[in-house]
Length: 135
Image (cartoon, helix red, strand yellow):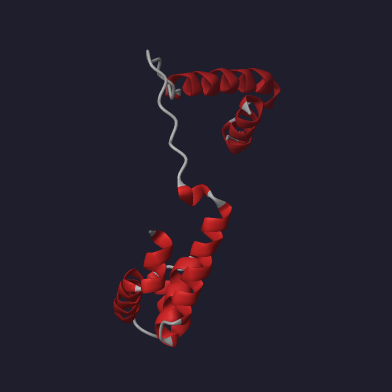
């Protein structure tokens, strides 16, 4: 990585290098400067501590069968939404489109997407079947 970065810097500066016979020195200096910059920017991500952190307790949601039951219940709840709200929820949360992209796809305003998705999420929160699965 270091050599590749130094050579890339040399390539970028090619027009400014007056004596192309001195390229070895230029690349060596680029290597040294790049490494020095990397060393200065290094950060410490690990810290010593006296006690090990406790592992997360195993949740019931970690059970694949329960996860599948929740996904199935969610799809059934989404299918009960009105078609327009369903389309907006699917585009926003399953297709991961932004509000602007969703509005463009459906030919509506961004405000319409915001309000319809908000109402749809409210209906999903109040859905009795989802409440049973989440409990």
